Image (cartoon, rainbow, N blue to C red):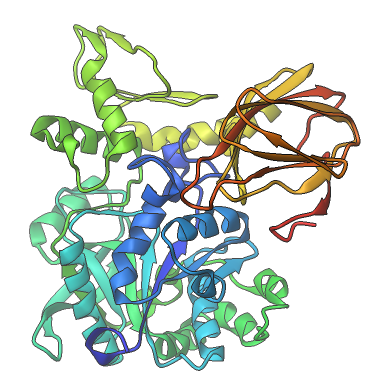
Length: 501
């Protein structure tokens, strides 16, 4: 039954593009999957969110279809069985803000006779390090929600933030077991600095972190009453979801704050006593690095290590001449030198570099919009990385100059690419690590480091990593393409283990 004998369904909301964390976060690889706080999908913010709520039960996920591969690969790295991943992962045809995502979840639960369950909504891209306190806070919220309350988790402000919405509270509230809460009377929009200072001094205001707990049936009632433009299309949703695209064509795009929360006379807020960040900018991430340098906590920062530790090392090892408080998020093995500048953030990736003054990184979003409008190459770099994650592994483009295109391709242990052909290019493969086998026009050949494979134009081919899944070594090879066109759409699939034929 879950916590306190209540049927509780923890759900992760995973959407957005995180453009304020460009160039690491992009539309094709948003911040909840980025290697900012750990290397590999298993250390992403999405994975950490899933692990944080797993003590309450098997997590559900609501995300967009474009993130299907990243979502499922991450859940599989956490050893969540596919028998749970498939029925408990819901894909929106396109993002329409948080109210439709929550309505989609509630309608699905209703169709599965789970409308009386208590639901927890948790954004996939937040940083919470004290997981024990987080879990105690959620347990308190569940008690209130079981009584029919809509509950928010309110973050106690630590400075007069102008980038967050606020929850205004008035009276104390007590859960059935005596746990403390607050009676919230209204949501407040993102304030100006003077108003934010008033909120901070009053002591009765909390940041709205977008974490909600409620009975699904209660939220359905409120959506029907306050947001018919959101709920009515979902009333027509079929149990097999075959008309989900039609539903999303009709549904109103609106946040749950505007659709429901701001229209309530009151609700319950449970104050959070743990450190929290929405990792919404490079300023916030840089502050984390500088605090770690000051305290020496980067040797074991609660699991948030690899990429941040790399930033700490680069920051502390960078040559700074008459310079201070500069932060580097590096790529590869580069030297970074600062001369006569202070408070600079450098974010370096394979195909783009951001240089910003600390305190100004909120404007990165504006820079990304300008990139999108400045030309096709810039558009690609604004929204796409030089690498892509695929069901079988990943590839990274090393060079693409119109004459040839080269990639480094990694095939996971036990995985294989589709049996395919190309009409406009040939390929040369050099195996650099791992072992496997190549199928070329029906003939199978083993490969190992140093093996060369030539794939002629039109030849049917695939490569398979024969190592044991999850524990074996990845198969890595360099691919050089020659021909008249190198687009990813020059592919005909004949067989595929991942249903893409």
